[in-house]
Length: 355
Image (tube, rainbow, N blue to C red; front, side):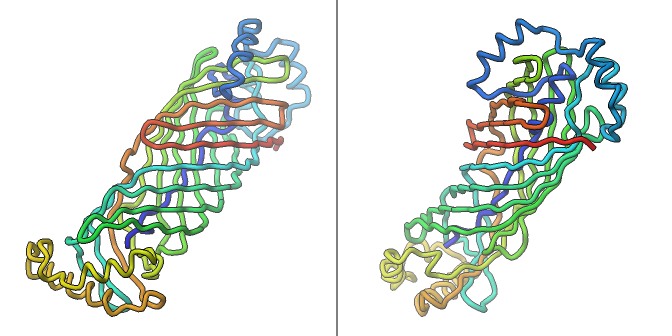
């Protein structure tokens, strides 16, 4: 009944391949794909100094006319090889996480939503896959801003444990958009990055877009692979928050599986004699009577369930490891996985150009 109740927040990724390239030049480094770590480590040992030589600085500055990043020329004069300032990214993302639900209210069709304390829900499971386009700009050598737009496919499973037991599954699609900021600091090969982004996800069965926020903290190292390429790896943590209140509507035949509908109506036939009903107060019994009457008289194909609930990530924090590889000055690749609390995976293709 409440399977779709869960808002889907699509965490867009923090410091992209573009940041990794920048961090490597600032001697504050961002990440390598796991399979590149061995090769990158060896290359780093052969090229311990990531700074530009004086000849390289003079060559770059001779034709350097970029507006961004601000103070970019000064950074190059100090030996930092800056990435091209504008990034165009294609991101693919998948995630599975637990969602805690509370404060459930339900009604049928045009009836007003009423508190439904007699319905107990287990921990929901939300699965999301998404693709988004993201544009970013290095405003300063240590500050990147970005915006994104994408499509998400969401599937939510909610176990109902009282007054009857069944599991509800609902799939839906939607779009999302967001903005974010990444800042960096570091010394030599080591770096620290802080990223925060805000998203609004518009799913087809929710009344209003769901606001979300993802905070990412990453520590990593960067290495030269050869004269033109750099590889990076990192470890860190993500924190996710999204708006707690969700309101929406769903067809009864989507909320209640067809194989459960008959047994549910049979289980509710004498509900007023059941222990869960006898334990309710006057307001609770009134809400139960209204909802059960709607379900018992329902045509599964035409009845709508309206709902309200509060939700929160079962595990707001998770660990992440990842890395990136700078194939050329223009093309970068990035990957990241999350675990312990929330399982997620990210792949990014990044194209950079001058401005």
